[in-house]
Length: 196
Image (cartoon, rainbow, N blue to C red):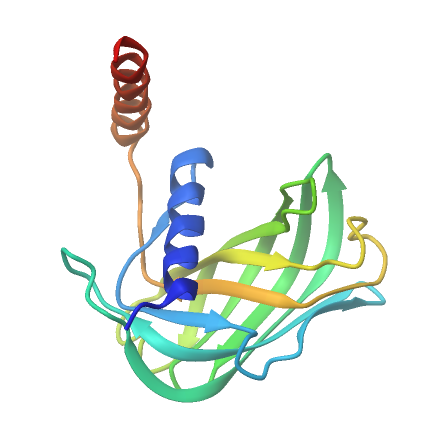
């Protein structure tokens, strides 16, 4: 069955991998997380960021991409403390997250990048796993995704947001050669389109 949320999360994560130097790409298997299945969304109150959502499927690796495996809905929660802002980048620190028995983790710093023009915010952070069946023997991972519907773009003050779309799982470092290859490929595509 076609899953538009899954496609959107893959696009968001791909955009992160392409346009954010130094970001590690989330690989499979990974939890599919959304606030569309009963979570109450995002709030920042008194400098404490809280994300309440639901993990409802697991992405697997393959070509073509196999359909996600449905799992019983489990509560996903993330908390962190507001630290600072610089332009469109907002930093939250001392975070933790959990998704039922599948994953628990902590993180030192999370970036929330405001896309502007009402397009929402991209979130990304590297995780230190503290437990969970999806984690197995791994020690590190990542979460990447987006939030939308923010009541304010000033994340130093209280705000709410209605929708969370994210993917959390293992990571693979993206070497500098991939950035160069990717930018070169995009340039060739642009040249080919111009000629046609």
